[in-house]
Each structure stands twice: as C-alpha cells, then as structure tokens.
Length: 322
Length: 259
Image (cartoon, rainbow over all chains, first blue to last red):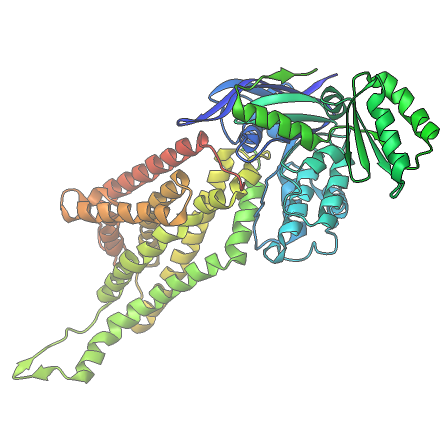
C-alpha cells in the first residue's frame, strides 16, 4: 500500500523539553489515521512538523513523497490543516473565508463557487455562510475550519482535535464528514477522544511523552490486546439455577477465573476455543436464561490506558506494527 | 510569489472593513486641516485674550505661509509618527497570536508573499493618510495664506511619507519578530526614541528619517533643500535594511497553532 505520510526519526526539542523523540511512522494512502495520546504527548507538535509550521531538530517527514522541510510550498499545495481552536478573521463572513482559502489554492470562477458550496453544505454551514465569523460559536468555527480545509480537495488532511469543542450532534456531523473522506483523502487526525478514533479511524498511533508506543490498524490492536474473556448477562432472579450454572462453569476444564458481579458473569478462559464452543451448550443444559452473551473485546480506551500507564512507569517499549 | 495578489486583496479588505484605513485617513485629515488653521488663528486668539500685562507688550508677527507649513511638519513629526509607529503593531504579531498566520501559511502562500502583501497594504494606508492630510494642508494654506508651489508641496509630501514609512518599519520588524502586539509597538517606539536622540546631534540628523522633514519644509516653500539626497538615501537604506531583517527573521520562524 502506498504511503501518504512518512516520518523517519522525527525529533523535536524545545530547549530541555523533548516534545517528539525519534518518531517513525507510515500512514497509508486513503486511511483515516488517528493520532492518540494524552495532553502533552506530542500530537500537536507532530502535526506542526508535518505541516511545515515547525522544523524538526532531527529526522525528516515526507508528505506524498515530498520532504516537508525542503519542499514546503509543494507540500502546501497538497494538504489542508485544521487547527484545534481556529480563530480566523472575525470581520469576514463564513463564505468569504472558504472562498479566500480556495483562492489561495488558485481556484477561480465557477469551480471555486461549486467547491465553496460543496464544502459549506458538507459541514452544515450553508445557512450561516453569510454571517460574520465574529458571531460564530466555537462549534461553528470548527465546522468552518473543516469547510476551508476541504475546499481544495486535499490529498492529505491534517486535523488537530477536530471534534473536541463540539456538542454531540456537531461531533456526529463532523465525524461523519471526515469518515466520508475515506479513500478520497488521507486523514491524519489527532485526538484524545477515544470514541472518535474507534468510530471512524482505520489505523491508530498512540503517543506518550513524545514517543510512539504503538501504531496499527484499530482491529489488529484490539485483537492483539484482546483478553480470552466471555461475558454472560443472566436474566435476574433465577436463584439456584444461576448458582448451579456458575458452579458448573468453575468446574469446566476450559475455564480459568469465573467472577460474578450482579447478573453479569465474566469467564476468563484457559482454552478460548473450547470455551467458545462449550459455554452456550452448558447454558442450555442448565436451563439458564440469558440476556446477553459476548466475547469481550478490549475497547481502545482499555488498550490506551494499558499502554500509557506502562509507558508512564517504565521505559517505553516501542511496538511498530505493520 | 505564491498567493500574493489574493492575500493583498484580503489585507486591503481588512483595512477597509475594520476601519483601519478610515481612522488613519481621518487623523491625517484633521492634522492637515488644523495645521494652517492653527498657524493663522493662534496669534489672533492670543491677541483677543490680551497681549499686554504689567507693562509688557507681546507683539505677534503676522502669520505667513511659512508658519502653516512649519505647523504641518510639526504635526506630522508628532502625531503622524505616532500613528505610523502604532499602525503596524498587530499586522504580523496579531496573525501569529490568533493562529491565522498558521492557517494561511499552510496553504500555497509563501512567507515572502505574506509579508510583502502586508507591507504594500501598510504603505498604501499611510500613503492615503499622508495624501489626504497634505491635500487638506495645501487647500487650507491656499485659502488662508497664499498658494504654495504644487510641485514643491508634492515633493515635500513624498519626503514626509518616506519618513513615516521608516518609523513604521521599526514596528513592522517588531511585529514580525514577536507574537504580541504591545511588545511590537514597544520596538517601534524604541526605534523612534533612538532616532530622536540621534537627531540631537547636528551631524547625524540628516541621516535619520527626521532629517527628511527640514528638506520637506524647504521644498514646500519653494526653497532649495539642504542634504536632500543624502537624507533620502539614508532613509531608503534604513527602510531596506529593516525590512530585509523582517523578511529574514520571518523566513525560518516557527508558527504556533491554537492548541
């Protein structure tokens, strides 16, 4: 798969602070790529280096095969960038700003008007486009930021916390708009909202203290960190039937730890395949009624917390997945 | 220069829509109008307040066109320079402060085009101000005294403009170097103070932007100016050096985003 964004040993130091440390990463073309990390992890620094706003202390970054430091003008023709808390020119009207952004990319006439209309419609700003930006709410400015970033149909779109200041409805719209760009553009999106990454990203890189902890497709990461656990939610008030069922579970050779919390029974399997086969027949044999049965998948939050807590307490182990 | 024309249009619209141009033009218009009026009516005003006290009689000479021009130059050297120093303080610093510089400079707009468009816009704003102020002074001087040579007055106005551009360039450099408006204005004010101190020394004054004002006054009155070309060359040299410093410092500067 072709690479849209590549970092090799990218390092950024501000005085004594190492903001980004020997960062190596490849973002495949067409991916929606989440850059995840706690505050101060180096996400914004990474985006600033990738957009040419800051210069690396060491290493290099390329976008579309072009070196960001040496070929910044060519890189800027191919990308768009959305700031975390965009301010823009308060005296301009919404449409005016998107038009201005399009003009900077050399768009003119009918094509410019069409692109501006498209971008405003996609971000739900058509009705507010005639209003002055100074009167926009934070969420509207964020959506305007996305509109101006889309007007040039960029090859690579860099988004710094694009949904952090939006209400749930606004977040839903923005994330849907970003997800719709899949394949049409490569999206690199920094965020600390794990649910957003889980919802729209194909791949994720987790950073902490300026270091890359892991980079992998979201599904692969979930599989890698999956625990061999099953959860059964029992219908309430089954009395002895439930107790006997739990005792049978504990006696099963494929079950390790069996824990009950209210009506939820959690089984950690020692033989995952056998447990997957045997649990439901055991439920039927014991006449237990189930509300829910699932093989638990770790959420991105579980993985994130595991990785970042490990890196906080010990020297970070770098894992670079394909 | 990538994006220069588009960004210059934005700068000019901003100047109009934020009333920056209007304010500058209004200040210079007032300066232009009150200069000949002050020269003409101050002696009469003082006379009407009483010129004789305790046996001492104060005699006011009849005001002339020379007084009107001198008053205009004096006003420009005070309020005019203050406007020129304060006008550019936010031009670059405010864009960096708000993150709009990062917004436009991640698009196909070169840093050279960004700064040049701002300089052209600043120059046009000051030119409009000086033009209106000079026209007002010319008109009221002709009404209240006698008309001065149009060519000479035009030349004098160009010298005044060049002088103001040099003072404005100090703040522009400050605005480029720093990310906050007030410290940028501080650099401009410091430049003005240094130039004023240097101007105290007679041998150095012609080489400062303040050294342009005496030749301007003489040109307006149809007299032969002294050290005209030396002063022009020195001011142009200062302007070019300061602007080059601004361009060079901005070229490698890292820009902040709103995080």
